[in-house]
Length: 191
Image (cartoon, rainbow, N blue to C red; front, side, top):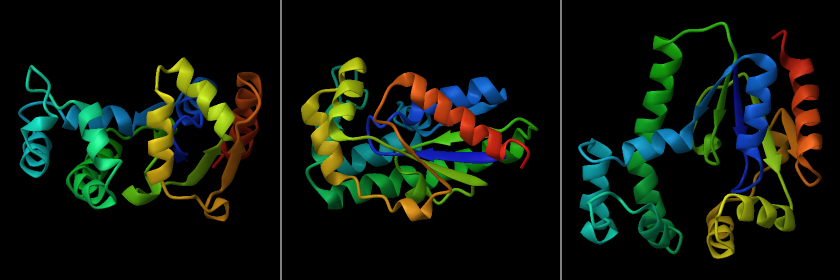
């Protein structure tokens, strides 16, 4: 079983994924982590990103400075499309490779803010939503600046809840989020 978990920045999607992992004994495929790996030196994506955005996005050790790159792409949707055009096909390929080459009877939870855009096949889709004040709380806990939060929200498209199998409104507390995960898992575990 493959469950896609998505939501905007600081909505709680990674937290609910951890709850799902714990109660299901499943695995998490974290698209953010995979993307970080693609940004590493000596990868084709690294080279393509440098070719597209220049060496000004590098830090003093020639690693891609995600903050500098983010400042560029969050200001210009065309540049974000260029970046996504470089990264998304590779991410989709890696995820499909993980699923095919490492089959398992355990459920897999794919976590990404851009899951719909990646067009990865899932059995269920979960959208995690939260109000701005709750997002600000989550961001403080993760040391993400409010400025970055607001820029990210500005560029992320609105989600249509009717597209998803489950919609979790994460506006209360961690215990409620855990309860939501358990309730969803009860419904889908025998799929």
